[in-house]
Length: 95
Image (cartoon, rainbow, N blue to C red; front, side, top):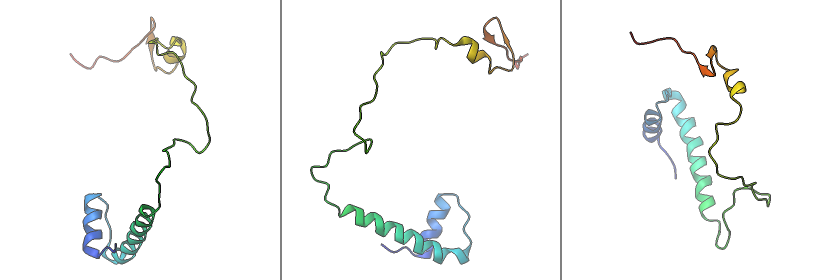
């Protein structure tokens, strides 16, 4: 699939990217090469290939799904600019 200047200009407009007119030819070639590569990937036979999340065979560690407060209130409040009685202190914004 080859892209022309008008199509590249439209893509740049949709992406909110400013592209100068002298860059359109080069960009059209680059985008056309990318689309050509994607078309080649579509030709690969993937029948019988299971989807995977990693190239290494591994199982993720499981934990109990329980709700906690994190158990680290001091560490959390250490990030606060101001804290008082175990809570974040924020300036009043409404009169």
